[in-house]
Length: 258
Image 1 (cartoon, rainbow, N blue to C red):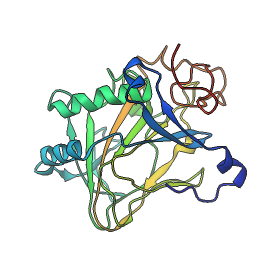
Image 2 (image 1 turned 90 degrees about the horizontal axis):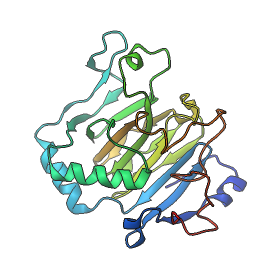
Image 3 (image 1 turned 120 degrees about the horizontal axis):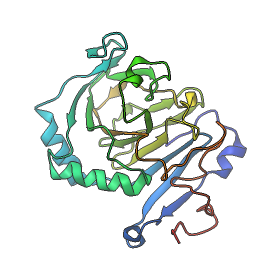
Image 4 (image 1 turned 135 degrees about the horizontal axis):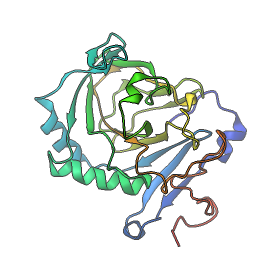
């Protein structure tokens, strides 16, 4: 993990903690590293095992196809020159491993996955990349109008391999780069607490220069999060840590829900 172009003052405030805000996590807490505070982005370390990765790759490998994006004009998935990779979508009931990851993501994020999208598996070969984009839909997007479950409130990105060179996730506006670290997951909120898209989350997947990059990502939608991530009154209202409902920050107190 590297954070480029950030001031020493901000770097000095970053910290790691054990996430234990669920009874199950008291015995097996998540290891969380805060990457950014504003907007909040974190790394969950050692959150997917090599065995789980192997199973996902085995289930997905023969079904990988050229990745597509949803066209605002046609509302259909189409190939795009700015996204070079192969992918496949795994439904929740398709394999036990998907259901297991869903349960884990809920514990990681404190968000409801009832209206989350299927698990997307992506493979980036040499030269594979995904140009600058947002994970959320613009408020005037016709695609958003067709989504009763609302916008993509958050993204969970599992790194299932570690390319020798390249493949970083880069957040352009906030000048932050996260290098792929196998077995870890990157998490961030796409929407501010008031429901507006957070344009600081604009990001890209850098080209893979040496090696192969495997990822799995889950897009979580707004529906069902009303009490899990309550609305804020201002665009500047945001969490200090994952699942922040006004309690003490984990830097100073154990992250245990009372």
